[in-house]
Image (cartoon, rainbow, N blue to C red; front, side):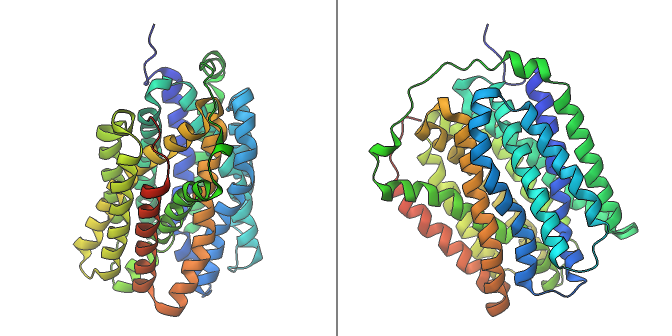
Length: 384
């Protein structure tokens, strides 16, 4: 009997992914809290980016564990680490070493939990609809990304950042419950057919570098949006940043629900190229905007690009490494993406300190457009 993508286990795991992502998404406003301590923008970038750097350290390693044993235990461990880091945020009195350490520990838990949850969800979905299932999984994160910053913004209007941290903690507890109740579903569906693994060593090093650079640069470019957009909007005089994230998330959801599986039918590269170019051009648009509505629309356009590129680019890497190594491929993809987020945040923060917001977005846009052109020429055209 053919298994449906939207089975009970898949839905529960996706709900757990929603809650853990919600917990992290309220921290998109964390730079506003750090700004009350008057740090440099590069320090803000370091504090935000270290979260991604520590996630990088654990994802590929535990990707191999996921391929052998499944993701439930790894997910639970990651969530518990995130929960353990939360009390420290209430004690912050500066943008100093404690803030860096707390974000670093939280990032370790984030890296474990999100990679494992993606693996659980993909194991519970039909293998022939890989991009479609990953697109649907991502919808849970996108919805939380829309609600999280907007909810945090409203909470801050009436309370303080302590209330935001409490909401984050509650979301982590809810995620832990969801993962805990899918024990049997996760165990009974680890049954993908073994597939022939591609010989990665058959490709020149330059080709491997081009493939690895694509998610890395995409992560760096996205980091300029997520980690600095609140400060950028405030510098222009926009009082509310939440609508930007709502527009971003609405577009990404619409795209993934309607077109998330398009690369399953027409090929990965045919989707990666236009979506990445769209993201790059939109960054150039962000650099030059002055209107609040143009600001919100740019969020919508960014969401369109993101909604297309994630399922296509992540499944491209799975196809390249072989479906037998799906957990490792997912961990590697997310690590490369987080390398971009982690290194890009302080680098672009430095550009921001030197040249301002607009030039920072110009550099980010040009970088992703250039890398996309190189990828389209050099990366091998796989069957999917």
